[in-house]
Length: 456
Image 1 (cartoon, rainbow, N blue to C red):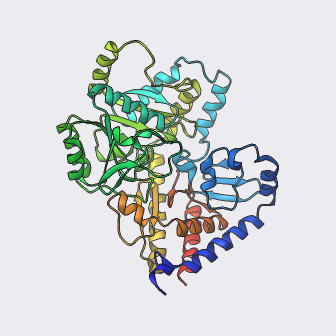
Image 2 (cartoon, one colour):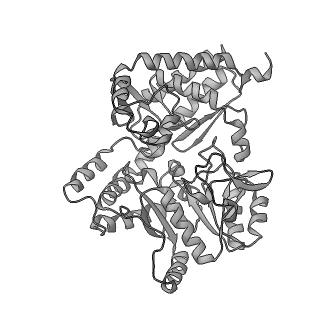
Image 3 (spheres, rainbow, N blue to C red):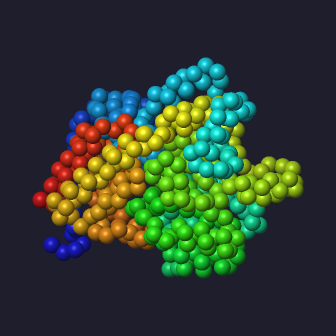
């Protein structure tokens, strides 16, 4: 069988058979879902509330009846072990009891009023305790937080550009929707209605390439480096041992701010990757799980950046800043954040997550070895990913080459028929503090069974 007939060592015919069998089983098991979609989906563009809900590999969307702990129950009554966990938004489990209690309490006291509450004051102290001494602001999403952080960076440096890494994802921030092509910064393919030249406001380097970063910064027009500590929205890429120290040194040498987006790497441990590994960003960004599933994000400026921005802000003409949204900083966010930071995002819960993720990593590695697959597993705290490639990846170009959409979609679909849900984008799995050992073992068993079908 020639190489084009295989993907990551798997015959294409087996991938197709796995996908077809999973689709047939999914359809057969969900008559209520099909009827409900037939009656109610037409009002939405493409039949879904958000277009990316079509990116799941099932023949039609799963309709959730309820989500509890680390399980989802669909309207046909199927109980599913949830390792997607809202792509990190529910990283601590669905509706943690302290958060649910805070939401119920706040729902009787008002949901939005454009003014702070006592919960807000408590959140400020908790954010500093968890993540370090920053001057904090609140947003609705990490996309917003990154966008606002870039405005501040440009304001205090007087420079136009942001440096990001090839293959990165920082939400739907226009400036970051760029990639490397033949050594040049160009807009990513597929952007809807794109008219601006994104290379005017952004430049791309490869992750783990300090020489490339230095060459970009030497031009003197980069206001900020925006990076995740680990590349996560591609096949996961870990930093070289000296990469973050080098990045910090280069940014300081060239007068460029360093913005670290911890929205996914918050899985690393209490305080995120920055606190766990001693990183020192100028601006810190966190979204998704910070309010236990309620839409919220935070971003914080180091004291010296905050002072520079205060001086800038005092002199700028009056008018709209281009930062902030009406619903950001609402009382519901603060109630949920306070409960999450104080009672859910704890050392004890992270220890549980770490143990469970290590068990998952070990089980997946054993299955890969048993079937002699040229794949590997990467883990960052509670975040685990299998990658259909033989060796660890160093940058976005390698991650793009390792990504195998057809094979991965078939595996995802087959996992769901076996009662396990993982993220639809790449092969990410999260272990929450309420994920049971038997759920982890079921996922490992399902993965092993699928490998048997693929490599028999």
